[in-house]
Every structure is written in C-alpha cells, then in structure tokens.
Length: 197
Picture 1 (cartoon, rainbow, N blue to C red):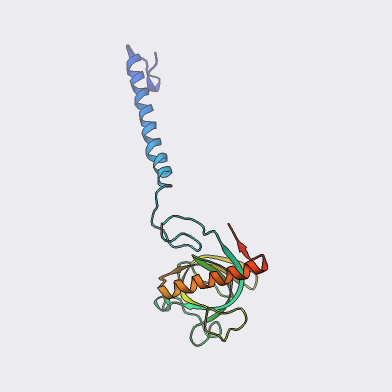
Picture 2: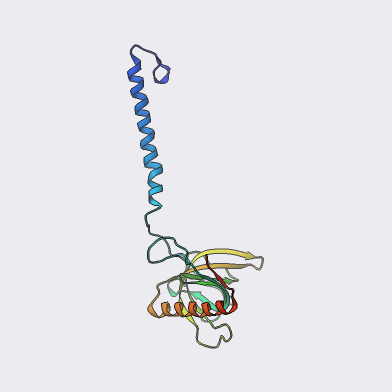
C-alpha cells in the first residue's frame, strides 16, 4: 500500500489510515472554526451603527413595519460637534448653517431626504421638519440624525440621504410619535402613502 506522498514502505497500511484520519480531523476542525462560528453569530445580536428604520432597542436589524413616502419641507445643518470637520461655504447654507431639504420618507427609526450637497456617512445633523402647508409655523419635529446611506439621484447633482434618529430625548420621541400619527391619518384618508414592508 502507498502512504501519503506516494512513499511506499513496509506495514504502511495502519500509518496511512492514521494519516488520513488526522487529515479528516483537521478538515473538520477547519470547517467548524471557519464556517460554523459565523453562521452561529448570525443569531446573536452584535453592536452596530444605528440604521434608519431599524429596531434600536434590541440591537437586531429589523425593518420597521411602516414607512411613509411623503414630501415635507425641512432644513438640516451639521451638528455642532461635527461643524469643525464639515463646514459649507456661503451660498450653500444660510448664516445659521441651515440648508433647505425635502423629506421623502419617514419611519419610527429615521427618515430620508433629498439635498443638493454631498453629506458623508456617519456625520450627525440637526433637522427641523415643517408642516406641509405652512413653513412659518413651529417645526413638527426637531431632532438629531446620523447619516447612514448616501445615494446620488441625478445630474444636478442631488443626493438621497438616509438617516437614523440619534440621541433622542423625550420631547423628540414624542414629536416622532405625533408625526407618525399625523401621517397615518393622512395615509388612511388618501388610501396611499404607507409602505408596509
């Protein structure tokens, strides 16, 4: 009988079988360590960045059941703690650093908007969302966001920004809930506008 490596010698049968068993054990160990562990980790919550529409409490990536496709006037500016590393020139924002945007979708975990300037991921923003009909009224929502997704939409250029709510206090949480209730009523009256996905 030939041993491993094509070496032939007396009484190699038992040593070859042992070598094959050792090789088999090695492959099993490799499979267990390199494949089974990542599969198991899929079922274990792990730290991650906040994502728009995700379940923030459990740590699991779970899309919220209702996302509203809307168009609402709003304005954003870079949060004070990021203002030194991301500062826009005059003409892009007003004297208070606000930039007008259109909110295009809204959910309990975050929102999306269209803006004419690029925003990098993970930058924190302040946002004020206004009523559909009268922007002169106090904002319906004032809170802090974190940019999670950036997508160029056309040649202007314009960017679709997906954000998650972050550092929410009780007031901003109440504002989010009130806005969802408002949008739910509008959606039911119109029969459209809510994505149950």
